Image (cartoon, rainbow, N blue to C red; front, side, top):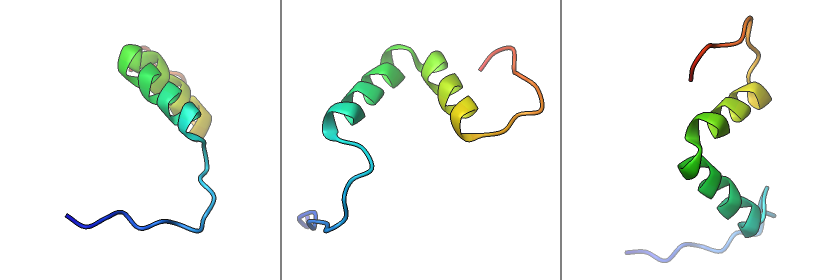
Length: 50
């Protein structure tokens, strides 16, 4: 195994936010991914189930 290199770049989200998002994606995946799909994609019409 190789060690993970340190990055000079600033992360896009902090660890607390990441863990909260991860937990939501596990506990309530349909709602989580539905929100992400609406946030990042353009849809011609809403879907009935995800």
